[in-house]
Image 1 (tube, rainbow, N blue to C red):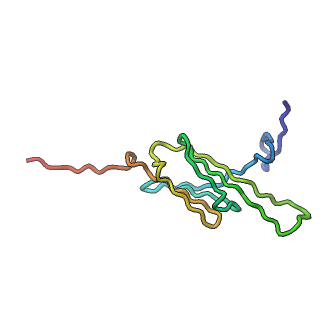
Image 2: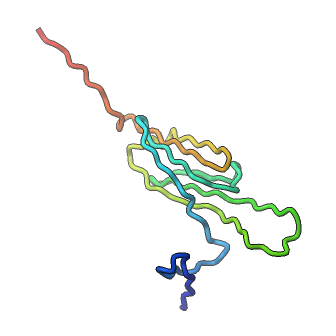
Length: 130
């Protein structure tokens, strides 16, 4: 089996080429820690809300966005290509997977991962005895 390679933009390493229909982009993300959980913000330009699939299976959060590219006419030259987005994150037991929320606005996906009750800090009351 021969392996085709493509040169990366930095020219530092060769990356195995895959079939074009299966190529996806890793969306850039920012992850913030809040007092009650985590917030993941992902940039998914061109992926409409109804084409974004978010799921958790066996402790892995998967974000998959399918892009719709609409043309205004018959292309004479086509240099711009949108690709689908795909990204996964392994979650710890500290995430309450039953209450994950997601919101999409202007191509930016915000996923809120609340802490499980067992992971939240608990305040212990100190009692006095006589």
